[in-house]
Length: 126
Image (cartoon, rainbow, N blue to C red; front, side, top):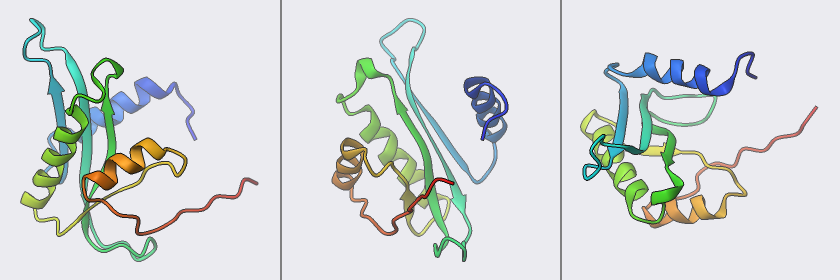
């Protein structure tokens, strides 16, 4: 998929999303650290009805990242809850996300936050 190095390409993509009215981009910072070190972030958008995906209008969480040093300290939970609230405040009637099928930890985490399976994407390599 990528014709360029992933990190700079994704950084450029995220920078282009900041400030758009249909985007939720939240950052968790360590307020005790002098430089306010970034601990994690979440990126979500408002999505229209998508007939191809059989999905009604929603907020969609695309990316959640928390630094390994602070995982299991509630950072991801607070980011997800804040993003859900922000999406609902922007008019989303629901919030959806996708996670890797084999990522049992993430699936269990999101289930604890009230997310449930709704679709199953299947892939066959060429």
